[in-house]
Length: 331
Image 1 (cartoon, rainbow, N blue to C red):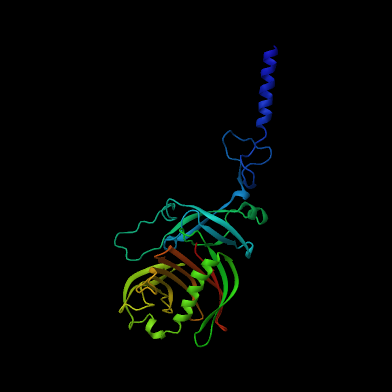
Image 2 (tube, rainbow, N blue to C red; image 1 turned 45 degrees about the vertical axis):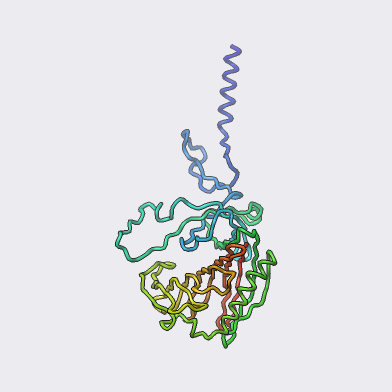
């Protein structure tokens, strides 16, 4: 009798314990699938819980943008819900095993003879700072802008600079430093030298560096998708090995025939201490003018290895030809 009573008590206690469902994580209920009084079968899903203190970002970068991205790299993000005034800081934790198109419900089956190249996107997972998430919580599905800060692994040094870039009516470029963060050595040896070189390059005869048939050979290679529309892609190679000229690709907007991207490597290095310079320049077309939007430069040096420089342009004003240049330096 006593043992039977203990067994019934234990069974009743177990049923009471099972009447309360405990979630394995803390968070908020994003989707409830049951109502009060409804019977729930064992193993059925009753609700979805989102752990907002451990959310992450899957940034869908184009494959061409991932040549210098690796796990552990720092990243700066902004969310549309809070605007550009709130920045999140995170780290790249890994890459998806395949592109978004490869894991689509109906994957694209491109024929071997297709001459239109479609740029693919690869999800990059970025972990966010929990303290910043607590101050400005995020929700699943929100849009964010991501800026990954590049690095020089050999030096383990980095820097970022915010500057005002002005272009005078005669084409002279000057910079006014607004904010600087990071290592002074990178500021002086990488960022400052780059900005000085850009200013000095303006003193060269523009016609000698212009992307024209006089300086380059062009070969049409096809079309590529850029932000939902096709653009012309040309393979360009200089007619002479001259400082400032490059070999690579030129993307042109079909309607305006203005450049939307230049990428490649310089055919002549500006210094004996530099073995190779590669770059990607993205442009935006505003009122019939191609304005720089982002520049990614990789410099292979003979002394300290590879240094990378990332410059983002924003707040462009055509009237005064003034831009805010955000320089994400190198480590």
